Amino acid sequence: MNAEIISIGDELLIGQVINTNASWIAQQLNLTGVQVYQITAISDNNEHIRDALDAARAKSDIILITGGLGPTKDDITKQCLCDYFNTCLKFNQEAYDQIKELFHIRGLKLTDRNKKQAEIPEASIPIKNVNGTAPGMWFEDKGKVFISMPGVPFEMKSMMTDHILPKLRDRFSSEIIIHKTVLTQGVGESWLAEMISDWENDLPDNIKLAYLPQPGIVRLRLTTNGNDKKELKIILEKHISQLNEIISDLIFGYDDDTLEELVGKILRTKDKTLSTAESCTGGYISHLITSIPGSSDYYRGSVIAYSNEIKERELGVKKQSMIDHGVVSEEVVVQMAQGALGKFNTDYSIATSGIAGPGGGTDEKTVGTTWIAVAARDKIITKKYLFGENRERNIRKTAVTGLNMLRKLI
Image: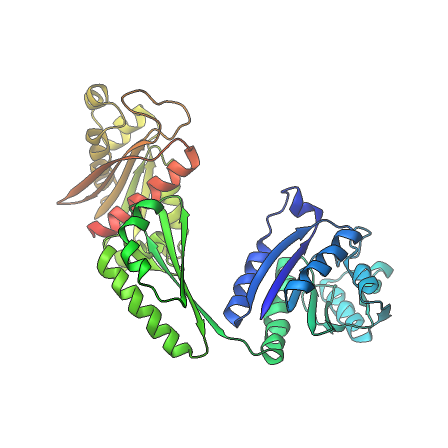
């Protein structure tokens, strides 16, 4: 089955709100075996909505719509759907009782405007909204299914999970779609593609490979579909095992794994501790580490040594080393890592020093030049990187690279 997602709202088109609803819906549909043909964002305009519905029904079996179901004048989706399906609004007592209960629980006064939200197109089947006042609507017309939901994410997600997805599974039979994502770190997309080109060329026709690069990481997503879930998994695992033989040093995890989470698990399992000394990353590595619940079990703290004075005073970096070699140098980053080990009395440390940009570069050390050191009590690994000219990407690349260097060291 094919589906299209139509997101309605001017706020999406002016960049005021990121369309996270569409990506979440697409993921859930895919897990159900429904392939998303297209995602469309349109304005709060009757003509635009009608045109989008016409275009979607020509290509897709299921059309999911979010947005425009609120109580204010700019919420026009419900009336537009009435016009589109040549029906009228009809008061729904069950929906009204749900709205009254919600207002009672929240201690709010129910207004006439809220009561009107219990009016639903007569040609539709109402979908219960336990978290808000706008019911969803299910239409069926000439073999096509149209589903309208609120744009408020937690209202939409509950509606999808509890009502819409189960009904779609009952209504349609579809093939099973399975994804497996291999997470790599260490080389860019083009280099990686060259390294695995023979393996990629040998993939069977029913396995699709997608390269999904992000700063410092390239995800390889393998997708297959069919009717036998067990057999599909066996086929995927076979080819992933072959891939692992080729680039085992680059693979750090699968699917939703993150480096900060994996490093944390290793440290906790081995009962080891970690500290950081950050210059160019400005605390970003610390942020990633502490975003993991329970990271206080193994993470002790950080010195954000942005100035030379702090490097010298708090981490024991020698002033002469900074003069002779520059702040962005192997000598300095090694002393930073050693300083963190001693200051926090940890088993491991990560240290970073670089030119994040966009200014500060020289002919000798261009923007993006970065030194990373990861240290244990008896060993230090250092490496120089040239990450590029974008400041945010440089910070992200440095952080994930440092975490992966630590993972390998441990």
